[in-house]
Image (cartoon, rainbow, N blue to C red; front, side):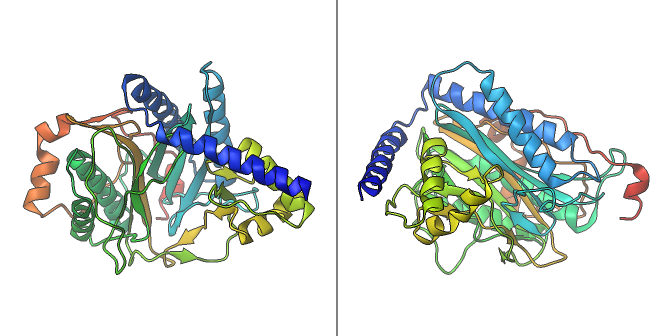
Length: 390
């Protein structure tokens, strides 16, 4: 009983400490610099991962290498405070999100023409930078076309439009409407369960949430305010935009600080103690966990101490593209600390809405939507003969 009480007391103290840190939203000059530092690391990690997205590579190794790269970069900062990485997930083709293979057998071998969604992130003194980039495994001198190209271009244009309109006073329903309109222009659908939300230090999901597409049940409407930080996560599909689990075991979890209950099993108590010490507030991967520690996860999930990040899929034969970035709202516009240009694709469709076309062509709107990151397309790698079967 004493052990249970101590574990509960530790969790409660940890919860209070992190809740205090969450309220300390730092978007002054020093705070913005920390966000940009984290964003710079993530930008380089995405470029590093894309350069290794070659036909024949296993997604498990790509995730491991990306996480190690980020941790290595963070270790070289020499800064005070809490630093760490958000697990890299690589979801291919109709897999929508959160595929972080626990082993090589659990991973997928890339082929030429695969649509690869790379999602990763890191935090510097609790200031979180997240990035999701969609890459096509192909060759430099031959652009990808067809439905893959349609959904990639639609996702990038939706992200660009949302970024340009993001400023104080923006109404949340306008964001969803914009994503819906651009998706329709390319005969694509928003993944309606995916969302954009505000963030703060050590907190990935705040109270302001806006879905990518209109649904029967919508979160409360809100207005964007100055000095807020958002995780802008846009996900479009060539299908209906309805994703579901297909039985693949998740390997990314997050501690739910709203829940503190005693555990019966020894493996469960041990793994929770490890999570409380090393991953108290943000997502982590169980890739390096022992067999005993993994056995303890079930009771933790059953008692709502851990939130599993379910691997979700669109229908077979469809494609899902994602673009995600951290954005800081300022009076004069917004700063996107994670950014990469789209891969080499071309589509037959274009934005036909006059208002949105004007927004995307407006140089003034572009000047108020600053970006940190490369401006040239990232490399595309695979042998030309491997590409011919597409």
